[in-house]
Image (tube, rainbow, N blue to C red; front, side):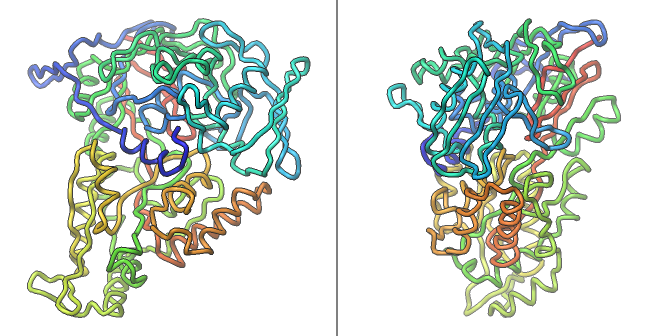
Length: 552
């Protein structure tokens, strides 16, 4: 992962390229993926078979510190294990490779007891020495091999081990409250010594990612196909996993393809078993036809618009609050989405540590929006019905989010709702490769969409809104109250204290300052064809394929 949160987010967003699989044939309404075998079959509930999975995006670097893109998380989640797991149902932390742990009262010392008998896919042991090497590598990176430190981790640690008791003792120079949550992250996936020692150019290859997870990648054809094969000896899933042993599937063929119709056609024709991302209008029809819809909102940050206070007219808090009250999320959900989607109620998603419902601050109230705009001096109306002040139209500019297949309809609905109160919203489009670099650098842009599942809310908020992160609000630390709230969370090792700080931060960003406008909770939606069962989603809504089985 790049050395700073700003680089980290930029790398993740910039690399979320999408890809249309070549040689796609449409025959009698059926879309086929050239070169892909149909979904394999086994006896119902038995082991074996091949699943073809179609994802809308190309997996990027397999180097775990760089694994920020969603599709990369998908893969790494099934190739590696982590010290700590977050139960996807209760959202509580639970043992995984660390069978237990303790933390000192001052938050500086952690002792992890490492599970015995765990091995990597190359047969090497996942033992205390390997855990020590992983932790040090995450914190310091590897300059010689071109590997940056993981910005989610604390900046300085000392690690000692005791092989006899299988204990790893971690000492932090400074308390770091997010530490345990960070250890659940996809980017904290444990890897073998051979992977750590490899040059960066090798670490980016999935065939060189040696993990201890239930699958390993045996071949990859970049942007075309990734073949995962089952590890026959896997026996250390976290307690919350339904399947405690080796994966049921023998093989997964992972195919990236951008086009929604291609993915849907692949599943409905039987050439693929599971897809990610389907148009909401398709969900209900597919469910009626016997397809299984698996959807979840992961812990972390909601889909939200950060409002640039440095870009007029959003330098006026009354205008920002008017936007809050001009959006009718209920109408948007009814017209575009399904019950698998939900209106955001904060900058954090429900079930996230420290979450607080602050939706009263942005409840739909067009009369209030109109009143706020009048107070701000936008009292005139031009021939098109837009508000004016001093002969200038009330105008906002944004770019449609390229990372969400529902974004076109969402942004167009908001554009219409803004017009109802006299605000002109200019919608612009960019391709995937240029979106991050151009949209975020455009000084005329008033707001953009951000927000994804994240293992720790403090780290996620700091990456977006701290002067030490991306500083998306452009405050450069000038809002000392916000900066203090974010900084203090890092040191608040008492859970009650940090939860209170997180609640204050949500109130400050939304209710007090109107800096951030929550839109929707991020929903990841998967479709499984009849005969494919057992798909589970992680706490971050990532697919867990170990328990999936296919039958006739």
